[in-house]
Length: 312
Image (cartoon, rainbow, N blue to C red; front, side, top):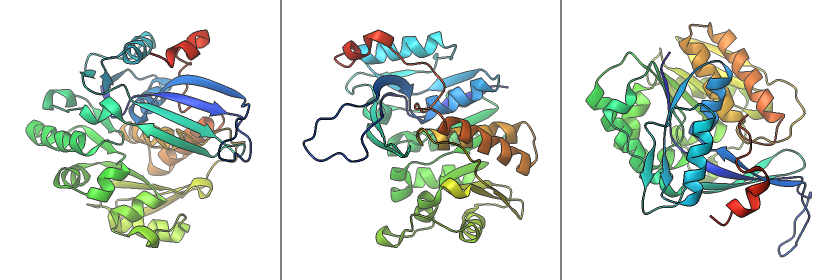
């Protein structure tokens, strides 16, 4: 099977073992600070590779030392980087991941070169096209590439960005209509439904999520997933609704769990598994990701050279 993962590629600076409370101006010792390859597209790539698939990665890096090191690192992992792009006037994307003792992760991100990504029709030659959250202009280019290619045989899986959900431009609407699988969390689903600001609920009940998933489907064959954290996830497809409880697991970090869930579901779906089986595999994949600090299973980038890498 030919797979392409499209979207953000970042250097994740993961801070674990943080104190329960951190006052402004404090200086605290933490458990660890490590650099990992990350970003939605790379997290999905790791998930696909865990399941025996080869992946072509389409993303953008800056023309800088950190981008060079990241590209070399992911190429050594066996990822096809032939479609990778370089942005000369933006730095490689970075994210600082702050993991609280509870495992809840806060992320401070700088898209950098990721906002420069441009998708062309030839990039979409694949059996499964996985689209991680994109900035507005990359989403517009994806819509145009899909129109130019005019091939509906590939399975298109989309995890829309908050920016696209807020803006809901013409390109995003075209991609949304074309998607075979659409993955959202509770807040994102409400944004897509047009719920505004203060009216958005941080949590939805299972019943509310099922009703919303069905309402948001662009067509009945579209598989629409809404993840609900500790409650699990719901799926609406072909006139049916499915509910999968979350696996019980000791949480190290929540970062990357959503990427693991959607990418694992997408691959199972493309392989022809029944909806309930695909949901179960996705839930297990998310649980496995919750049990580690990083957003994927790839090793740290720099080992003992991590501190030096921060200055590149």
